Length: 111
Length: 111
Image 1 (cartoon, rainbow over the protein chains, first blue to last red):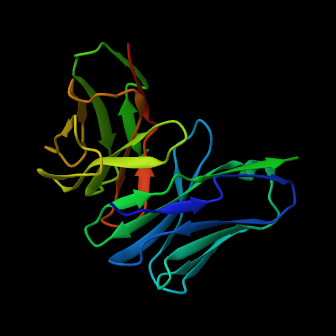
Image 2 (image 1 turned 60 degrees about the vertical axis):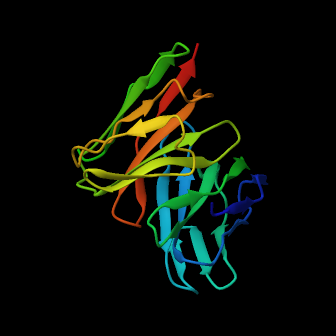
């Protein structure tokens, strides 16, 4: 079983703060790294899919980077807003096609 | 509208009973997945299917069974052999090794 780890487990920030989370994954047989946002009472939604070492993706105030050689990805949120409160999941896909998820980072943004 | 549906939303089972959770998608995705979530944990893969009439065990397949007779449908049966079935179950679909789209989930409780 691939071991995907996320840190921190939870995070509480004030509105306007910038924050970042880490996802670590085994680099062998790597194919893709996925980030999802999971809001309470909703289904997880895809944020980014990254496949190449050095990839950087951005969507509004949220961005992500990927380092496949050392096996980590960072998710950044600039100027956090209360609507960013959610659990952020990362998942690593290997050549066999299945994804392994981390336990997630739960972000709470206080107004 | 395109999407993934799961039914029922809530399901109660008596010990020793088999139950089947429904998952249907009209996104024309080849791949479908079943995950389980327990409190405080991430998503763990139960089974996945990359093509009709074919499926593979995930990390926690014991006590579960699936079928993939149609591209649109991927039902999950929780058998009496599953020792601790109370959990939240999510179905997803996607293009092979790309981002996944999730259904609303089924919460199963064993009485």
